[in-house]
Image 1 (cartoon, rainbow, N blue to C red):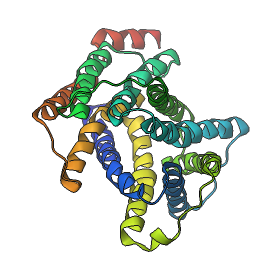
Image 2 (cartoon, rainbow, N blue to C red; image 1 turned 30 degrees about the vertical axis):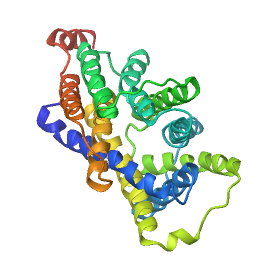
Image 3 (cartoon, helix red, strand yellow; image 1 turned 120 degrees about the vertical axis):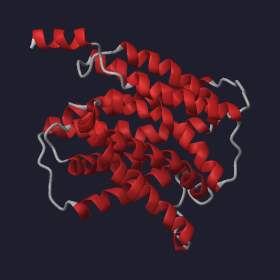
Length: 302
């Protein structure tokens, strides 16, 4: 596939990461009224309903496929968000951001061992460069190292969940409508999120929904951050591959601090700007194709 043919995939991934980096602002505002699990469930319900209206037809699946979609909803929706948000209650937000940013390298390793994509040297060097930038961006001029095994392990679990979701999605979604794939994934995300909300045992506040700020942020999270972005991310997977697409996750922390600067008036340090440059370089390096000899070997074996 030529670079021009891949261009929509790059645009889909870049748009999605820009939105996902901005969802932090919406979630932070909604946390004044709702728990993380309640926010997660509400955004999934909105996204699922929107995709049903957009594509109101059933997706016929075998039992094996249905089990795979159950795992997708569990790994890429409910458990991913639950482990990430719970990690924030035990450890520093900077720790969580840095550890979750390890998802692309976990994805590359898992994709290699499952036979989805070969591990490339450029992927490793891109990871080292981009991850260094992530650390600078997340610390934003203030370096605080405070390890908490429980919280840090939960953050790593979130990164592993996303890696599992990514590799499994590429495998089970071949030949299927991306909208129907996303809708089915969100269905299981909703189903598996309900027990997490029930375990909290807290009432769901209804009165805040009358506030435009609350409903607006929920609509942004559900319709844009979940429904649209999950579909576009799926499309990017098929155009770029799971490893190249997930490398855009390195940009997520920088998008977040830019959004925080614009909407929450938080400052950005010169070190964070340097980190942004390193992230960009790392992402570009990670997109480099394998050497010609690799492609020739692949052609020989085929």
